[in-house]
Image (cartoon, protein in one colour):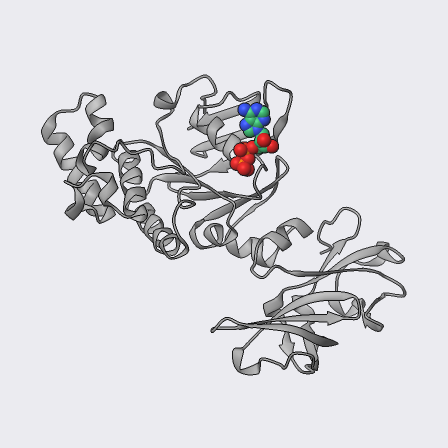
Length: 358
Ligand code: ADP
């Protein structure tokens, strides 16, 4: 039996806005799940319904198979870390972390042991006497995490916890949170709009858009087997290139050239005459002309040398796309190049439903 179950969960706010539609998910104990999607897609609303901070309008939330819709946050055994650290500024790191246990009336020795253990996991042992204002952003966020972690809870919820940190701190904290999760084994749901956070941290990712779950899967599944154009474009950086085109005689015409789609081994019989979306990832291409690949000519508009790779912005007549190449192979701006897209790296989507064509 799953540890947490969300069964057809809906949220309709009092003003009538339907923010979450039929959300279904089973979570195992100890999993690290990330909800990801653009701002306003319903991630926080769903998290807050799991936390018990927001009513569930429709559907059931189960913990260990038992309905928990009517339970408050404490009964559910959840701890939550928010975007703003919400630390008590006049209290030391020690007291901030201890606060939850003190409220519960735990005895001093127990609290002391727990605080020191939590501080050790979080690398805060040397900072226990400090006030929050004498800490860096990353350290403050660790205190906020420590405060949530110290209580023995089954469910650990985090809502964009890294968004107040600078880019470098975010990268460090990302791996620290993953490490903390490994040490504590707490079942975690983490909300972010950042696909890189989702990809690097999650056991499984839930991609949301406009209040609907688009796909649930491991980072690998979402990257290699996206179910639709939205997921394909959301996961991966730079995003997948998409070209809208029409199938005629089993082929498509892209920038004046014909490409035989029957080589892809996909079920295309019902698509004759219809529009499809041809997708390929910037990093999936090879420069030059290769076997078992579509070879395309392109004009180089702009290149961005990033160190480990170069992003090459190209045009093929009216079509714009990005290629990711080895920096040593950076082509000249304004030159014409040929690149190859291996057949196995081509994605096709239904032009109308935008669902993947298998
Ligand atoms: P996300 O976390 O993905 O950015 P939210 O869950 O915060 O999105 O919000 C989802 C949608 O619900 C948004 O369109 C938002 O404006 C709306 N919303 C959030 N809170 C309320 C509320 N209290 N009343 C009405 N609409 C709300």
